[in-house]
Image (cartoon, rainbow, N blue to C red; front, top):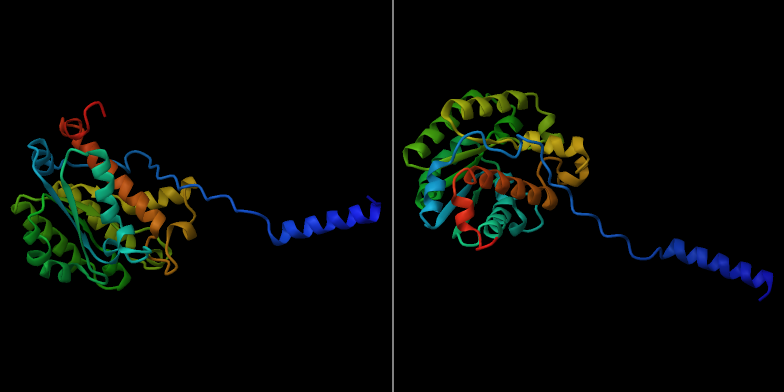
Length: 262
């Protein structure tokens, strides 16, 4: 082959590599790791543990606003409640666990409490995961009324014999633009301590994912710069399941509901 022809073929090959570089490598699944104590609950869930220990069916109500509903997810089944049910079913295949999504976008605590009877108590749940506070911050409005309503709502659920987990704000650019987010975070943490209710620390968990390099912000948050996306909702569900299972592991509940030898 002549030198000129060889040079021409090499040039053509180089051009083809530029135009058609071949299949792109599949992106690695994000690391859902969390530093202790971010994946631990700070208070027990006695009613949930007792029902599971008795071999009874469990209902969990995921209650809240748009990030419970699943805004930012590509389909409803990619929101965290559906994925939490899948995570718990995989971990506890002998248990019957149902997770019901009762999130409605845009609501603040007063609107949520108005639908307690219809959307929470009517389901007879053993656990309510209540995602709170986000819209009060986004509205740049007084937070004290919402703080009092969160307390009132928890007390009502506890009086009905229902365990409660509070879920705090999302760590996202739009949330960080509003000056009251640290105050709401403080209110939620204080309510959890005072009423002996565990807080799932979503804000700190998402901030850890950024700091650890598990996500960058564009990979963790939807285009609206507020809601989570498929990947981060999946990690949220996984770490929430880990937190619930960690609490249940303090009894024999987890072992009793795994497959034999599992």
